[in-house]
Length: 448
Image (tube, rainbow, N blue to C red; front, side, top):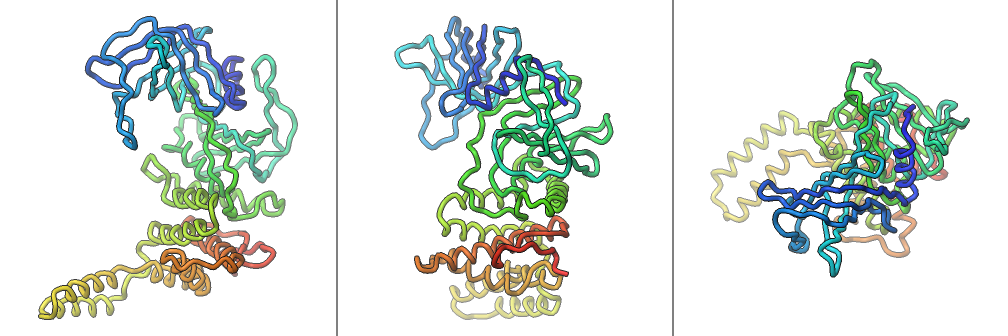
């Protein structure tokens, strides 16, 4: 359990309510360039506006360096020299920092500056029992597997505890995870199994990606508490919009009491699979799921296209070695290539035939899917259903208005195929919800 002072607790509560306000005795803004950077100093305030976006407003008392310029071509990435580093000392003596602030001058005054910031950082000597805690300001159902405690803020700022039944705890090879739920708030804690161990690289991202997969909706943390080298690193982010309007089904229907153990076993398997991904950005499977979630906010046609293409992406990323031509086929293709090289036919036709041979040498998504049938990962009928959906959506042969129910059914079947592929990739064996069958029964993967 973390122990924070009233200022930090009020900052977290204010961020959640969209009313964060930090009065600063001094703010320093330094332009992001090495040659003669523009520097501003003066008092000001960091607060959230009506859209919950974090902003800084300061009254300039001293400035040095080049003049302020906010010009830039529309559609281009903001150059580094138009972003500022912020260091602010609030009226209680605490320091806050931000790496990227985009400034705009107040109309009619060069002495008042305002700017947007995405993240706000603070270094504290307060205590955190584990190494990492992420707080998500959103309200979505999570299944629980233990009697837990739900935190509430008190007037003094400490986090009191009251009884509840919204939580889960499980172990991974080198760390444990605790997920708890309060009103419009979900917390994820990660603790190493041995005190001197460090948590895996980018585990904060991977935990969010895994929860996003389980509940099938975009998720982003708003508060990160990271305990390292005897200091608590506090990061506040502009709260992301609630993940409402998403119509992608989760792998297992949530809040089914008999299924809650399978849901968290699936969580664990997915997390372990993506944990060692070396890049800073999302794991490829997570990108695919996120893209389908976002597409499902729109039309059913957009959902169908995203599912069809998403299945191709998962097959390509996770089953790249499947469906390779047999040695006999490879020898035949090599012989054809030699014959084509000496063929004296039309050059354009020769070039097209050469391209076709290369396509045959590389297995298609369909080839890879068929190779998974013998592994009991997918079925022939699933592949046929995916082909129909994919060909219709990718080539503009839409389902008619009278076929809406048929399109919905096709999307449900494609959703099941997507999850079956992910189950196979991550090594999950257990219950899932079959959205391709009436009344959405629970079935076992792989089929027994």
